Image 1 (cartoon, one colour):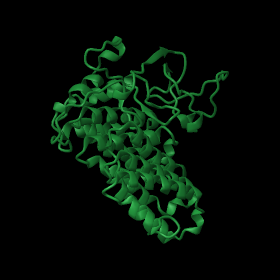
Image 2 (cartoon, rainbow, N blue to C red):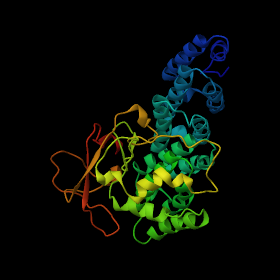
Image 3 (cartoon, rainbow, N blue to C red):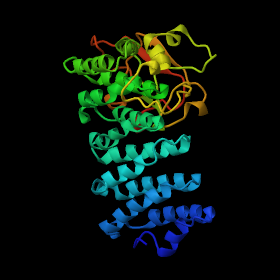
Amino acid sequence: MIPGLITQELQEQLLDVKNYQNRTNGVEELKHILSEVDIKSVPSAGIEAFINFLPRLLDDSNFKVFSGTLQVLNLLIRKLDTAVDKYFKHIVLVALKALGDTRTVTRNEYLNVFRQLMKTIPPQQVLDLVIGHLKHKNSRVREDVLNIIMAAMLTHPRKDFSIPKLCFEVAPYLADSKRRVRHAALELFAVFDHCLDARRKPSLMEAVDMVELNEDAEGLMAAVQARRARHILPKLSSEGIVEYGLVVLKSGQRCSPQYGSGADLDWVLNGGRISSARSHRTEPDCDRLYGYGSLGSLTDDLPLQRRIVSAGKGKNKLPWEMSSFSSTENDQQQCSTPNGKCTEQVELINTGDNLNNLL
């Protein structure tokens, strides 16, 4: 029982192990109560007790209970608004418990938890709590963490992050045993490279070099350089889904030579054979990579989305680098690349390219 939020009767309903319908109905009732309550009237101890109660619901094997609890967590963040800074550490710990799920809707829900938190809490503070899960034995969790970092960096200004520090923390996962993790790490390094100015860029190369030498990951530096040379960034859809720039197709599918070869693509497909002290080989490397892997969507659930590069027509930009976005805008902003010029533009053939609601 949590005064103002959960009555004794509702608590018993939520924890009824014999009847899953009672539990699913209880979660719906909980969402209704939370949407109607004046959160300022609930004492701080009650909110903390409520947050600490939610992991019990996330342990539920029933999908509706699990996904509904994530919706409750997102609703709580919205209700708390700026007061969320008192509880964000507890909320992050609860959300981390959900990582690694394979279902699209639930992955979207827990991505939204972190996205909402970073609207109020400095994103690096949130990432400092998340990044320890890169060592998780479940490769899906490691992949999710990399995509949370990527989504944050595609949303917020570079000054909000300790990018050199992130480079060294993420670099070992470029040589992970799992393809999807290597893919996510390589995409994240493309974002790091874009965000670092020339003075700080050596930290990125040093982090890669250290992994290549210490983990006996020969070919890693060439893969990172090849990924940089593509001049195409991952992006966020209007729904906040991370979409990768490097396209890896299913076996048997054909694509243009531009995407069909390269040291970076070869590394994603074969780099797992390189030994890595931080890779977890308890799982068979049976993942298949599709059009893009992302936290917000499982790629095997969606049709392949092609990204086409047109030389000399525009600039790569992250959402926070665009002061405005309209179909009639003629003046293009300058982006930063290693040589100080932009020679490529990404034309995206899919829906949700308008980034206004990410600004």
